[in-house]
Length: 293
Length: 210
Image (tube, rainbow over all chains, first blue to last red; front, side, top):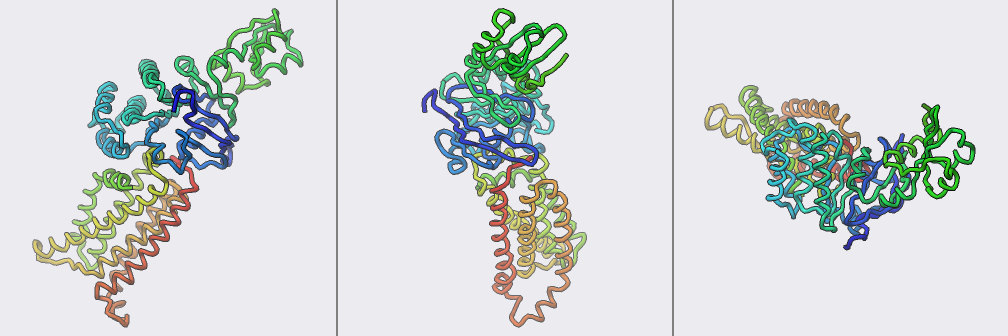
């Protein structure tokens, strides 16, 4: 498998709960890149990850990982996946060493030397009880386990939640190191968009159970535009061209998903800027009803 | 599957001490005609409950779901570990018998009938518990575990008093190991297998929830 090949392919994957529905998702994650799965809380990011991991049963659709179908080839697929959950689900009463003894035999490529080096780097002691660890330390432990069996694909569900800024930056640097050889892939869900600004190559944006887009960061920033202008420019046509609007007494700020169209409509009467991921997330989630300040 | 069984045995490693305490309490302190079955069955049932409760408490099914294992293997391992815990329970009841016989000069009886009854109770308990556990999830499991233990203890205490009467009424020699094994263990095993298929069909359709 080469770079630019798809490491994960989702084909109409959907899931229905009584109060939430993940609309059919068809998308792919490219090998050799970091893809950030971003969206507000409750957008469906964790549901999508659980479906990919086979922890949730899809209502429809299918998943292929490394070109092999889940769950039929689950064993060989998961041998190659390092998974980091948003919460620690290890046995809390065990020590780190005992938990390692439980986990390591499941992986044929478990690397004891690498594991010891990671524990040392993260300042984790094998005799420490898991329940005595802080949230950040538990995340470090999850990461040590996920990186100790030569995984080709790292799937992380909100890994930076609850981390202090110092380790947050260290984690992002480690992920950048992990991806260095172009054969490994990272999928990383978060609602903290600044993390993705730093390291993601591709962004998959989810909102209210639907995939809004999945594109390279460059394409997204080229396509979207943040329009800032006087309220007098807002009429039915211009409002219709904006995905989301925030109006104040001195003017408005709106997001357009078509930079060229925004430039045509507002021309020299507005400031047209490149939005941040947070702008895109905020205005898409809020919609045209928007915020009035 | 071996690694999943090994996992459950490692996870309850601190709880083996409780099993020794059960053996001392029911085998020597509360010594009566139900002691052998109580020690054997309760040891196995409590180990099953400890392993399930620890999994529920830590929501470890989500950790297990991330491992390179199939759903079928997860369920298979749960049922296989029952057999391992049953063997530990039977060993503890035999140990109580041997200690009482040679060290205390106050022998606690150990017969094939009691061993079969122990096996039957443990398999019956597991056959009822696991499908409900997989069906209703962790919250209901707490209630079920209490009811199941209460039921198991009631059955043990109740059955111990009527075993001899059953023996007298049956037209064949129930005290022979072969007959006991075929009637009690065979029936319980059939139920155990049916329960496994039921649990598997439930778990295959369910999300792994924390």
